[in-house]
Amino acid sequence: MSEHISESISFVHNITLSHGSNAEVWDTAGKRYIDFVGGIGVLNLGHCNPQVVTAIQDQAAKLTHYCFNATPHDPYIRFMQQLTQFVPVGYPLSGMLTNSGAEAAENALKIVRGATGRTAVIAFDDGFHGRTLATLNLNGKVAPYKQKVGVLPGPVFHVPFPSKDNGVSTEQALKAMDRLFSVEIDVNDVGCIIFEPVQGEGGFLAMQPDFAQALRAFCNKHGIVLIADEIQSGFGRTGQRFAFSRLGIEPDLILLGKSIAGGIPLGAVVGRKPSCPVGASSRSAPSFHAMKPGGQADCRRIWAG
Image 1 (cartoon, rainbow, N blue to C red):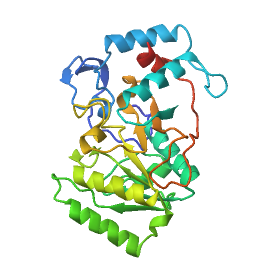
Image 2: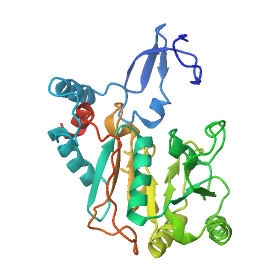
Image 3: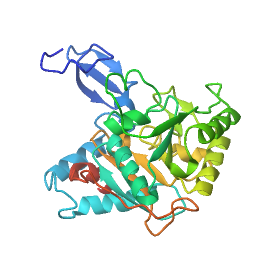
């Protein structure tokens, strides 16, 4: 591998790719592979999908970047209209675009703090939400993400993830939550609970629907924002648009990324409009905070085109 690549990056497969088409890739020696990695959930539409390529080429000839909060542009507006209509919930949605899924998660934490005035977060064992400093602490494992990085933003508390595939029952997970709120943290200090409907990094584990429904009722009761991280499970990977639909619930905030733009870096956080309450007894509605709600006009063209 090139001496100019940081040693902090490790590699799973010791090959160098040249090009790809649909579900196949070729290395620089011309060897063909079936791609089961797919950019880790990024390429639901396959490599070089013709419609995606055409959309990128068309938009690149018109406008490649503009900071939306400096001057709005049409691709962003049309994209958000389509995206909020695409997410299957029964309440009005609004949202913002980010540069990645991890950035969407970071913004969601800011939204929660602004909406609730609370800082504590509940996440799940073996979960994965990103590699930025704040999202590291959301991850439900130490190795390889939390080693040698010191104190991470928080507070974040973890509970077991109930799935029929890992031996953790709904009853066990609910008991762990009861213990957490009896021993570790006042429930009134918790701003949000974040979960993956299907854990990716954790082993492709689907959350138990009855637990998800109990979680929804718990958040409603205590004014806690329920965040579904659909960055890896969204856009058709479970046979439905989004995996949370299989659980019989509707989250308050939804994190999107990876296959949202057919291989181009893009993320989003969408949720209840500010005129709608977060949970049943929320103190206030969320507002959307931007790190860099930037201007990847190419990405938005994929949808809006």
